[in-house]
Amino acid sequence: MEAIKLLLKIIDEQWNNIKIMFAEPWEIPWTVHAGERDDYEIYFLEKGKGKFIINGVEHPVSKGDLMFFSTKVENSFIPDESSFRFVFITFKIDNSKNLEKLNELNHLLLQENAPIKLDNSDFVHEIFYKIQKDFYLKPQDYMLRIKLLLGELFLKISDQCYSNYLNNSGKIYSNKNSHVCINQIIIYLQKNYNKNINLEELGKMVNLHPRYLCSLFKQVSGKNLSELIREIRIEKAKRLLSYTPLSITEIAFEVGFSGSQFFSRVFKNSEGISPSLYRNSKNKI
Image 1 (tube, rainbow, N blue to C red):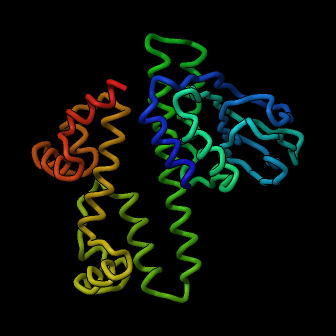
Image 2 (cartoon, rainbow, N blue to C red):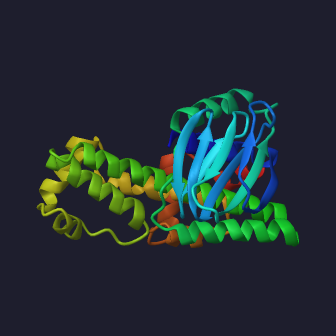
């Protein structure tokens, strides 16, 4: 989870220093020895099952799973079935400008390497094929299109990792009803941040009075419900400002604000600059 968050930050800061190397399907087992390459790969298992071996650690995968790792370490795939198929993306980040952060990213990847289980694999599958199509057909501005799609892909993965983390936390706190309730609310907000959030409906969802839910949420999470909703919406808006051509008004409605003026005011209070200035600062990188 921390590796994906750091990667998104690197993509955000070093947009022009990312190079897409390959985007294609794959149906052959492989082994890459440590030190042979220095890039990053993300695999989506379209069919079949098997296991990745990353730096000597086995990671079983099945249809619909994702695997993301650095190719600097020894890595291989061994299928459990005769028929399997991946789609994968290889990309490289200029390490002359990111050495410290890339070293941290590689360290985190070794700590956190595990298949990513998806709630909606169709959405991710579609992004992979859009990237693959643009990589081979090379339409106008195809590299920009691919980078935007790559950013969208890792945003989805980040959301999924967070959701998986909260689900696991819910299991850990299964004997503590308060944590289970709050985890359930946070997961709901992560998935429905752009909708009109009704406090009474949230209360019904976890069988708590709305006033008590607000108090419990503050006690367990350290934040007010309204604060968390704003934070989620602003983070989503920052990503849309950085990676999409949507207008300020379109982004405001996309992330759940009632209008662009209110969105701009909340955004400036949170980030210290207006949405348009934030976008301009990212475009200059």
